[in-house]
Length: 339
Ligand code: SAH
Image (cartoon, rainbow, N blue to C red; front, top):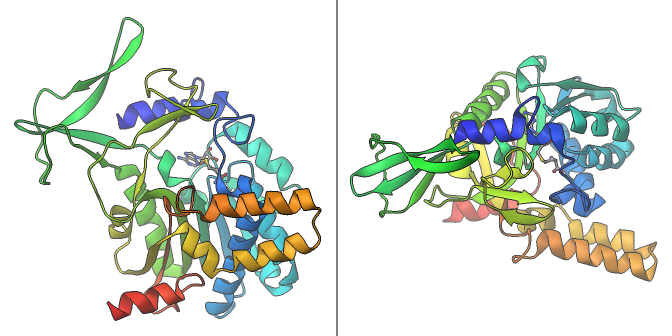
């Protein structure tokens, strides 16, 4: 399944990121930075505040994984313009495998001195501020299904021009509870990426902010989904033409970053409120037309409401162990301590 997901998304000729314009009203799905400029602005300011918390190091790498259309970074860069010391300290690195999206990012971020990478590996060593919004959900997962004689891996076969699901002939040695029919997802590619980030943070300092839809604790469930033109479809319907993602298991991601402090995962709605999104919305509305003011309200609701993106999306920050609690997590840390 993981290989299927990887090929569907990233095949250099037939992969989704090569063939489709995924993000936006005319694409397949909308992400938080596309909902409102407030999202990227707050993340940009989060980076500046975290840099000050670190003691304002002279040089720092500002890295975004999977920057999509470049919207988040464009809004973030505009928001930090008022922090010239931060602006002269960071160098911008964008990690993107899709060349169509890379072109879109180039256009959006014209004027910014950015360096593009195919993976985190080529980003030079040094203190790091790393942002990943809806990046981890696109990295491939393996699926296992509970049967009468244990967990069996779900495989993908290809017959008569169609892909189908087939269970591995033998169960595997997976030691975890489950009822027959339960599905468990395991994402070594995500854990490896996280471990690479953790190793850099441990060595050079900094912080990573990971935002994605998913669950705080590893639970059983088939969350792999295909989306095309804002509609869900079978994952086998149009390989390479639909976006494939699965929910991020934040517990597993946290485990992949040993020796670091983890903050959250916190619900997106709570995190954005803690960063002051409502005050920012009110500020924008003061100079907006009545129609624009209504749009800002709608966007705010979409980002914060528990039935929309507010609860399903989680935010996890990781820092070195002795680093201060990052912005947006303070009250949460106090509550966690009191428990
Ligand atoms: N962060 C953006 C886009 C999310 S979509 C937003 O919030 O709008 C996922 C992004 O991750 C796309 O830019 C996609 O091309 C990129 N991506 C997917 N797999 C990747 C990989 N293995 N390495 C680097 N980028 C990847």
